[in-house]
Amino acid sequence: MDLEVRHLRAVCAIADAGSITKAAAALGVSQPTLTTQLRRIERLLGGALFVRSLQGASPTALGEFVLAKARTVLPTVEAIQRESALHAGSTDGRRPLRYVATPGPLAVGLLRELKSLFPGALPTLRTETKLSTAADLVLSGQQDLAAVVEYIRPGFGLPADLRSATVATEPAFVLLPATHPLAGQPLVGLAELAKAEWTLSASQGNGLFECFAAACAEAGFTATVRHDAETGSARELIADGQAVGLGQATFRATPGIVPRPLAGTPLLIRHRLLWHRQGALDAHAPAIATRAERVYATAVRRSPHYLDWLADHPAPQS
Image (cartoon, rainbow, N blue to C red; front, side):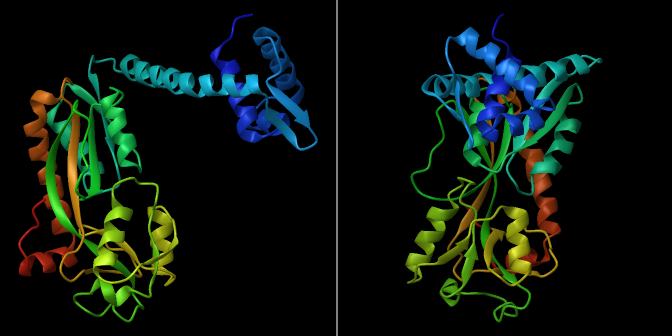
């Protein structure tokens, strides 16, 4: 018997579930079937991969080694399957144009523009919360283009093989519950929120935490970041009056949440495109950037709170 991809998936499923019974349910097979398969895999590899106990299944040293290799191999295999399916499914000969975006105003709108700009291609969208993940996908050639959102901080650079174009720079706005005492003010000082409980996402890797901490220190306080929540849950926390947060100036209206500009614009957000310098899109970057600027302008027009701010302030420059 040769080691197959399905065997690696089974080993990972057991490790992730912590028991053969739970892994079997996740894989859609019976527990005896998975147990038999595991025994065959262990015979093939020359040793036990898991120690079984009443508490479940935990990896042996050999199991840890196999898991580390499997978790490296499986994403590559899945990428081959996914991208081959794109090629095979394109009966009219169109080449896939793989586009990844972090949450922001460009994500969906730019996909539409790519379809218009490259009628001979088949644009696809993948979303990621982490800037570093999106950048790595482009750097490794798994994606052709990225649209990312980052808080501007000194000393941050990109790998030499990545090129970028800034689409827009905007201020970060504070997101307040509609019932918050400061929600009626046209402008909010960061120091006025020194006693607030905040919700921020630590997983985005876009400079938010570093920039926010520095801005709070400049304002004379250390913020209480009570919650680490992704976009959807963070909005619920804010709308429910349990926290305040930070958002893009192009933040779309959400019931129960009031975006307000921060006095002195202590935090800036940049929207950028990333592509590989040796990639197929390098020659088309100016045209793509122009389309991205068009998408961003539409987002601004849909953000009355940002339009009000722009009426009294010049557009920020990065």
